[in-house]
Amino acid sequence: MNSSRRQFLARSAVAGAAVVAGGTLAASSPTAALATVGTTRITALTGVTVIDVATGHRAKHQTVLISGDRIIAVGRHLPVPRGATELDLTGKFVIPGLADMHVHSLGDEHVSPPLYLANGLTTVREMAAPDPVVYDWRDRIDAGTLLGPRMVVAGQIIDGDPTLWDPNLLHVLVVNDEAGARAAVRQVKAEGADFVKVYSRLGPTAYRAILDEARRNGLTVHGHGPDQVSIQQVSNGGQRSIEHIHALALSVSSREAEVRRMQRAITIKTGDYNGWFRQVHPIEWIAANSFSRSRAADVFGLLRRNRTRVTPTLTMHNVLDRPDYTGLDPATAKYLSPDSIGTYQYVLENLYSANRPPEEVARQQQMWEYRQRFVRELFAHDVPILAGTDTGTPWMVPGFALHQELELLVGAGVTPRQALHAATIEPARFLGMSDDLGSVAPRKIADLVVLDADPLTDIRNTRKIHTVVTRGRVISPEARRRMLAGVEAAVQAPPAGPALAAGGCCGGH
Ligand SMILES: [Zn+2]
Image 1 (cartoon, protein in one colour):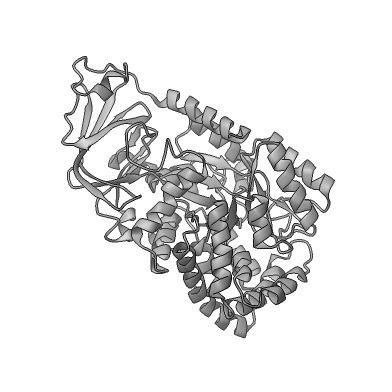
Image 2 (cartoon, helix red, strand yellow):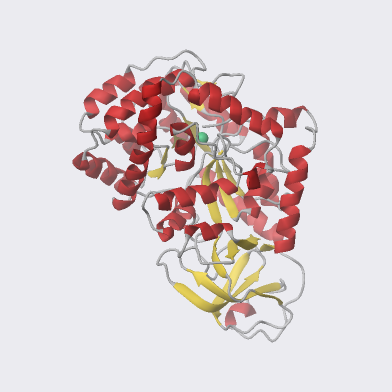
């Protein structure tokens, strides 16, 4: 077990202790399981249908007993212990808490954490926030002093030189040799990172040094497949997740050698993300039109065997491929600050749409079809998939965006159960927390979402949230309404100080 994992578990244990409610369990507990729980108060969810995301099985008429931060029993018509708080949820459906495995949180603790929880997200992987305040959130959430999802947090992005990021938009660590790469890893570790986030413009020498230094420091490496490094090298080198479809698409082309040569030849100036997109899109177009089934079987088989996760981030690609698509739903736009909306507009106009010639506009419309096919192929080859949105890029509203991602995954042709798997069981495995997360079962952490309708019948039903349970804490429908109203008020309030103003900056990616 690496040290970040130990730290992660240690933090989780502290959090568990912090959220245990006081109270005394009735002495006459009717099941053996209850005899061991000591003096903590029990909550009983009764009359629910529990969904097993691994199998798609629906268990009806279930009682879920929760004590402290744990589920202690699940069973049909289980008796409710005396003194327990019973929540009659007859007719509702219970799924494990959801995870968005690719977010860049907006820097206001009154916005992102409550939006995640209100949407049933009990875990998020922070892929490099514009504001380091997220480390503080992570620790306070674990200590039970801030209400929010479990957060696994990347350090500052490590990119090559020149980087894609304009330093006025997002500060990243730029490295161009082995010594710089190793120093950057040690820096993000010292700053409190749970893992290292790598980026597209890293050269092969720096990239290899990052993987090695991360290993020495007990950190895992997640992020983009660099332009100069093949997917096979990324996967065999031990990078644990690959974000987005860009780099992957090239590896499954019958013209792989040619498109990889083109990718290696890309040059940009510092901060010219738009210039990078302008060069990548024609290469991707060639790759998409030369998709090779045998290459896909080889590459996807390698990813499957190495357990290299892929986070397709369809929600991001949907907007990037079709910037004329205005995905901002008026029902959720009210949860974004005017500052965030302004940033999204800036990113859309300057990074995404600028300098895009008409033929590229037409091609990217078709690329969207390819992304969907690509996702179907990933699932068909049993590549482990993480549901992630790239929240922090246009037009995503934290928390709500994950439900869009689930819908897009199903729209691409996977089943609702497979989409839910990518947001529950696979994140739990990826984080080394399968014993604690990913199913509604005794001894697991009580991270649950109670839905008004069956998500296996229609994935859009994940939006019909009745109650959320996070580490045993119940967020009732009324509490959830208050949380959302609080966010709505917070985004309209003027920024409280320089820290918040800085936090409003930047789409991530
Ligand atoms: Zn991102």
